[in-house]
Each structure stands twice: as C-alpha cells, then as structure tokens.
Image 1 (cartoon, rainbow, N blue to C red):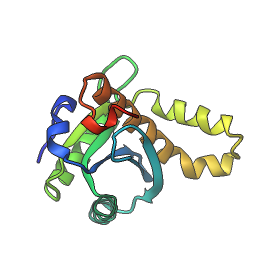
Image 2: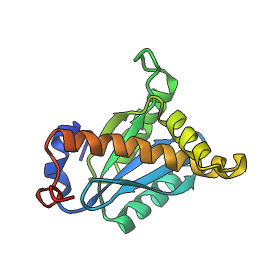
Image 3: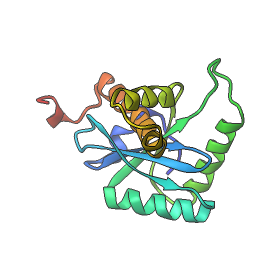
Image 4: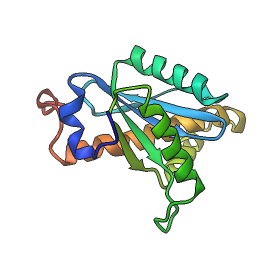
Length: 163
C-alpha cells in the first residue's frame, strides 16, 4: 500500500486497529487504537539501531497488535514549513513501504510532544520516567488526533455509536 489520506482509511482497515508512530532519532514511539477506533493506547518504545532492525521490530509489533494501518506523525515546523525532520520521516516511510502493505497516513504532529510532556507532568512522573515514556505518549497523542478526525468525518465504525 502507500500513503493515503485519512478520509480513505476506514475502507482499508476492516476490523483491525490503527497504530500511531512518533519517529525520533533514538526511539520510535508506538501507540495502538482499540477496535472501536475511539482511544489510543501507548505501547513500549522501540529503540532505534538501524533501519532494517527498526522496521523488523516495528512490523512484528504491528502484526501482534493486528494493526491494519499506520498514522505517522509528521514533524512540520510551527510555520507549516517542512524541515530536515520531515524529510527524514518521509524517507523512513518510503523505505517502510517496501516492506509492508499497510496503508500509511501522515498526521501533523505539531505540539504532540509538548502535550505528552504536560500530561506526564500532570501525573507527577519523574524526569527519568518521563524520558522513557515521552515518545509513546506523543504517539498516542498523534493517533488520538487522527481517531478524533475519523469520528468527526463520520467514519466511526457502525457499532461505535453506542459508546
């Protein structure tokens, strides 16, 4: 599969879950939705080594979670321009596309790490503990934004209306 617009996602995922990713230099933050596509749940980060190993670990995690699509955080600058981090993210996705048929949606991740940090601070989490959780928390914020957009588009699954 390839990069798709979020509006096209519901027809591609069946009854599986959606994964959210926050790509960092040292880790890959991971979160997955519930089956109703209502809530994002953080998962342990993947420590980055080299692309082949990173992709293998990531795809293995996605298979275990029954993920049917990926929402990839796109780190655009605050003014909307694309810097080196966007280019690195797009390069990662181009390489990942060669290894998986999962559809991938880019999602603007501006301020997701800030929101995740605030959330972890509100939980009175120590600095050391926050450091290990921040990327997965950011992935959950990225994914939750995309899930909320799906619901706003009326793309929620029919059995979700009761929730």
